[in-house]
Amino acid sequence: MGLIPAGDWLRAAERDLPRGADPAALLGPDGAALVLAPHPDDESVGCGGLLAACAAAGRRVTVVVVSDGAGSHPGSRTWPPVRLAELRQAETRDAVAALGLDAARDLHFLGLPDRSVPREGAAFDAALARLLDLAPPSCTIFAAWQHDPHADHAASFVLAAALRQRLAARLFAYPVWGLAHAHPVPGFPLAPPPELPAPPRGHRLDVSAWLPAKRRAIAAHRSQLGQVVQDDPAGFVLPQALLDLACRAEELFLEDPA
Image (cartoon, rainbow, N blue to C red; front, side, top):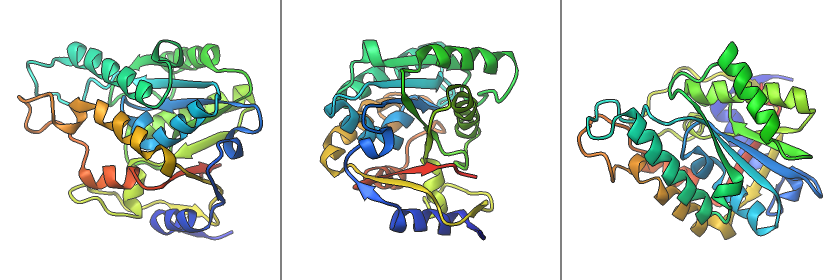
């Protein structure tokens, strides 16, 4: 088994992994989905099609947002961290509703600090205990790809991997920012790509039927689209190039990433 750069690895996954529109290929015949989103919006950008497909199929879905999202606009005075975190929770409730979920039942927030999601220690252990309480029976876990170039995404995968061990569950990773290794995003710098064992394993989910719902869900995250915070010109805005990648007809779910 040889190693290849992450960009080549992702392009091979996009070309060669099995493809289908039925979420049963990921969840099994009767399973549920537990989705960990590092920030409010990753659930929509990274796997909104999966969530919509599961909701339409009557599958049980639990979405857990790991961080509070309060770090996206640190220079804003009108949107200090507590107020921004509350807004981002409200946006996420609207987003999952657009995907067909019941926000009151299916959506939960761990509230860990944005940009500082832990990989160990007391806060990590408390988050893992909470996830064990929230995990539906017979669930498959979905988490952001550990090779996404964002510390909170990598830390969320560590949390998901620990949960997988405790539940003996299947784990799939969905790339968000990591897609830039294969499809460069203008203005988004990348460190040298990791080398990964080939061939990739996983599944390509055809989400073409759910793209309108996914776009509505992404649009609900107005604060991350530059539509709310007006006093932090250096604040975060989702790049259009990343949104274009997110709204393709297939979502990637990667199994046992290195």
